[in-house]
Image (tube, rainbow, N blue to C red; front, side, top):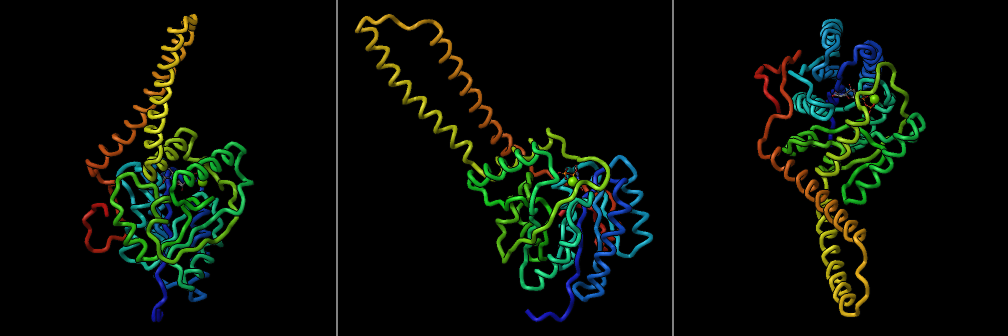
Length: 328
Ligand code: UDP
Ligand code: MG
């Protein structure tokens, strides 16, 4: 690949109620960007793209202000809260139109900004997808570490190709972004989808800090829902597992039938009421669980068939002329 021109970078930052961190994030990101422009790693028209995911605080006002003050800052405002993954996607889809590479990063400065440069350098070596991977999880609570580890193991066990200890801090080339756009499912679990795209990819390691300010927008309930969505959108193994449970119980019940027959013929006293109740509850429980799981998948199918937009754009601070504010 002969490089006649430096790549235009877009740093995509989804923000939900991030007024506390935005001024500092902006300051530091601009430094990173300017350094890279200076060292001729990226084109001078590179930008920081903030996506306001329906914040209820002053996030959007700040983005507009920074946009007026700095030519590096652009912004997208979503019409309402679409969730982290969709907000990120809306930014990436915009970046894919006018940039050569996009780096996605959280607003809270937990991810090491120096790794952005490392990612861009790796891009120059010919990699098109670069995953930011945490060296350790020492800044996490024991609980988060434990659940995260379990989650990655489970995903891998279920056959999903997922990068360990990688969140949504990554670089993607224009080609990778264009192909990401082809994944049309409404329940987009980016961490699981991106490895499916392929192209030459590698990892960059970094240390993750504490949140700079504000609090996590991923409380336990959201975290669990996110993990569950990830599993059911990437793997059908759980539903297959249900079939296996059903089959095993069927075989066991045949044995139980023989045993009951034998007991009757041999005149052995019939075991008591307790065992009947226990098995009744057990089978009932397993059945309801299985139905629930099947329901989850049907629910997913239902959602997908409606093909609703994943996010609605409200304002684009830097429209490309085709100012039709539609998704994609
Ligand atoms: N975020 C978002 N929409 C949401 C929730 C979160 O855009 O509905 C953003 C948030 O502003 C942050 C990133 O997603 O930039 C990751 O969120 P957070 O740092 O709260 O998650 P954690 O690091 O605690 O997992
Ligand atoms: Mg965070």
